[in-house]
Image (cartoon, helix red, strand yellow):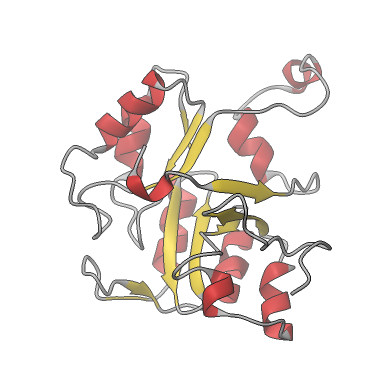
Length: 217
């Protein structure tokens, strides 16, 4: 879908006590409709880390419009997508509009460039995403030095109040959480163990970063 998302892998956990994932994946299904679904895991083709032209400062391809992103996703038989531009949300609603009438579900999202690393945030509605954006501090919007001045932990706390969830973006590469915050300090544990953090994004399947029992660091 985009150069930034090629070759990425998601490792996450599902928390049955949180309603956000159900809102995003099941939309407005009734209890009777939900009861007819098969039990067990179900896999979806998705790209939840897409940058678009006119919103992310590092996208120079003018063809990466919301409409083109939706058309490509449908052609590739994706079920879920999210336009997560750096510190911007201006193309999110346009992407949702472009997907109307199709089977493609667009999750409102954003990628925050914090001093602790990049954080992917997903919200149940555009209104909730707009609230998140309004409660954060940003600098140098639309430039190469665009950044979120709010800490990752504070971002997670705000997302949690808005019934959203987050993923640590490309933790094993430049501007990722593991690179920006090495070691195993208590402050790092506060982020990794936060209820709103449901997974991590890896650039390489061979990465040793997992924040699980197999991760010796």
